[in-house]
Each structure stands twice: as C-alpha cells, then as structure tokens.
Image 1 (cartoon, rainbow, N blue to C red):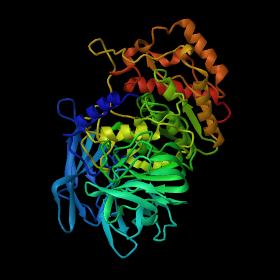
Image 2: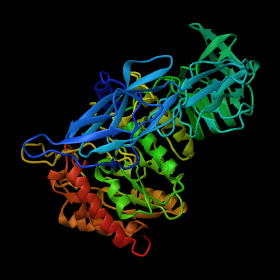
Image 3: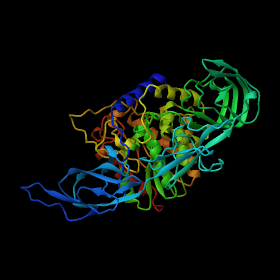
Image 4: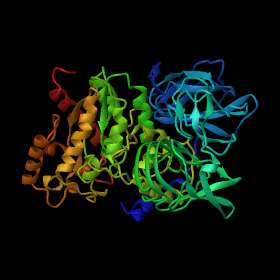
Length: 608
C-alpha cells in the first residue's frame, strides 16, 4: 500500500475530529424499559409522556417527575457522590455527559439525555463505587486515577517515565509486584473487576559494558554490542538517553526477549544483521525505522507500548478493540460471529439474530475492508469455543486482504490495534513480512494527526466523524445510526467495484481463506461462507451472468465450508445502500439480516 493513500485517508479522519468535543462517559442500557401508563393526549393536543426517575440515595435531581411531548428528548441535570459512578441507566437510548465545571470535592455533576421518548417510563439508575486504578513503581511510589472509560475493558496509563529504577527497563504493567502476574502493555486494556492495582513490569537491563556508543546531539548512539541471551537495552548509556541505533551495531541476535527503551527515536537500516526472538518490546514513539532495520528478522510476538496519546479513538478503526472487548466478554457463551469488513458493520442487525437464535449471543467483528484480515482472524480465533458459528463474508473488491492470503502487514492493521496494542501480542508473527515497514508507515501518519484520548469512543460519532446524538454502535458491534433508503434525489454511488468473477481469485487466495476457516474450526466453531452484499452499481465490468455462475462453482470447489447464499442474493438494489456500494442503509440491513437468518436456519438444520 502506498504511503500517500494511507496518509490522505488518515489525515482526513484527523481533520474531521479536531473540532469534535470529547465526551468522558457514555452509559448504554442493557435492560429493557419499565413501562408505566401509555402516553396521553388527544388529536387536538400534543400527546405527552410521563417520565419518573426512581428514588436512589446516591442520585440528586431537581425533580423526579417530568411530562414531555411524544417522541421528543428530555435532558436533566443530576449529581452523584465523587466516589460513586453511574454504571447503568434503564433507558436504551441515553447519554450521560459531565457538565462544564461540574465537579466539587464531594459530588460530580452530569447531564443525562433520554432520546425519542415514545412511552411513559420509570427510569432506574445503578450506582457503584467508582473504579480506581493504582499504579506502583514497586519501590513505594504510586499514583491513582479514577477510570471513566466507556469501554468494557479500561485502558491503562501511557508510559511517560512516571517511575525510575536504576538498571531496569519498564516494559508494561503487571498485576503482581514481582512480575509474575498478568502483563498489560502501557496504554493497553485490562480485564479486571473493581479497583485495579498495577505495578511496573521491570526487566533487568543488559550491562552497559556490553555496548559501545557515541554521543550525538545530547544523546547516545549505540554503535556496537558484545553479549548473548536476552537483549534489554537501557534507556541511558553514560547518563545519556539512548536515542539511536546505528548501522551495523548488532550482529546476529537470538533471544527469547529483546526490549527497546522509550527514549529510542531511530533505528538505522541494517542496525541488526539478524534478529530472531520470541518477544520484541518497543514503544510507539519510535518513529524512524524501516523494514531493513532488523535485518533478516523473525519475531513471533510483538509488544507495542504506548508512549504517546492515541489519534484514532472515536474513529471506526477503534471499533475493532471494542468489538474484541465484547467478544472476550462472551467468550464462554455460544455465539454467532460475523467475520468481514465494513459491509458487516453496516450490514447486520444483530438484535434480529439474538431474537431468532436465543441460545446464541452475537459479535459483529466487521471493521475495515482494506486491512489485512488474516491477523484479525488469528485474534478472533482466540475467543471461539465449541459450538460457535462464524459467518464469513469476504468483500470482493479487496480480495487479497479479505481472503486472508496476504502475509505482509499493513499500516491499517496498526490503526485497528492502536486502542489496545496488546491485541498484536495475540498474533504469531513468525510468517509475516512487512511488520516494521508498515509500523513506520503507521507512525508517519499519526505524527500529522490530532491526538485524542482513550476515553473517547466510536459510539459518540457518526461514520463521517460528526457527533452523534445517540450511540452510533450497539453492544454487538452494529452501526445503528439511522440511514434512510435511497430515492432518486440521493446519490447511488457505483464507485467501489467488486469482482464477481473467479478470474480475480488465485490459488493463494483460496488457501488463505481455508487457513482462516481451519483456524476457526480448530477451536470448535462451525464456519459458513456467505457472499458479501454489493450494490448492483458496484459490479466490475467483467462481471457477467457467466462469471457469477463460475464464481459460485469455484466457491463450492475450493472452500471447505458450507455456503449460505447465492451470489445473486448479495447483489442488491442500490436503494438499499447509502453513499457507497457496500454499506447498507437501515432497511437494507434489516432485509439482509432476515435473509441470512433464514439461510442459516436452512443450512444448519438440526444444529440450531
């Protein structure tokens, strides 16, 4: 992928979000509404609904009963004790936002908005002790932060040199002071209930006498090395911050762990002759490196630590981390998993699947079609269990990426991982190429973008980056902003051409898709192939009735899993799409979901 194309898209995303106000907290209801008497009022007067807020000793409201017009919003101010947090509001479409200057030593103040009130309702709050995360040096120093994360798993603190320990390098957080607990990278997400206690995960540095270096611009440049075993490069040499590794500094390095310090800014081409390691630790402020920096490398596990604030929080790239959070939370339940690009994000109404298959939960993992799906497949497989169902719908305008045949990393993959870099450590990178070239590409773009915060969320925004009045994603991972059905006054696109022609799919593509399916099945999941939705206008010039028939035959011949639908089932009227050829509007998503449910029932007869 060319850097200028990647850079243009990411800069556009950044510009859209610079002026968007960040919200700290959003609470979505998981329970149904408690209905009290229906809205009243005749045809000659505005119909009204009664909203009653249930008494709660922690909630302070100016009043508890409101009358509002039907299908309007209600916004109220409330406060809670500063050591308590609202964790649930019993109204599905609601947002909770901190008020400007809304805090005192004893209470925090919020605005609660209930959207599109269609029924009289009793609103209940769940209030719990506010979650705290305490960070420890291991030598008696500590600091505590209150978590206001909108994610199922909160992000830990970035590394900003908060602690120092002579002769040791910080490589992440750990749940135990001796480093034998659960490791979490700096800035990555942690799964834990209640308050969290974390300690710096220190690794003992390789001795200074193993290195040769020179001073340059107030920093140390490593020029040579004589040592063996694990390579833990200290953050200082001769009391100078280590900022660069020069060409030829390291020969053949074979180790279990190699760790680079957060002070490191540049690794020259051919700085390593060979790097062969199980675990490589580095920081995301390492901006200057290339695919040649580590020579002939083989790295199995990459641990990226965050030293700079994210730029994609709130963007659709960050949905992947939220989706993995949800998938992890239901990993022990039977589930249906959608494995696809953004056509799945827009294309399914998961609530219909939950209603049709009540014994299953649902996870919509669709994120972005032009990123390499193979790493995503490896992450998703970690959470699959016996009896799960995976519906795979590779998009036919990005065949190499969607068919999991591409072994080269790309910058988009790092974009998807930024909100939780630890997801990268769940991928065995031994067979991949392009890891460090794409990491450079990713970082080169990020340096041009506006920083955000882990407390931001994609559910606060619409696809175009504008603020959404209601949550834009549901818990399953569906994009749920209402998208109107096209008519003659709206654009009908035709810009993304999909190849419903097997001539564009080679043997490596079929092998890549079967690799992903074998991986899912090795975890006990049942896998089904389904043609990805596409507008009639979004077909390639060489798509014909003959090519469609040939594609259907090739799919049956080359893939080792059942096929849910026919190609024509996926080619839909343009009126069911909005702005592009693979993003269904609300009516299109409902229609596609109902079709898929019936097809799944037929294909899995006797299993569901």
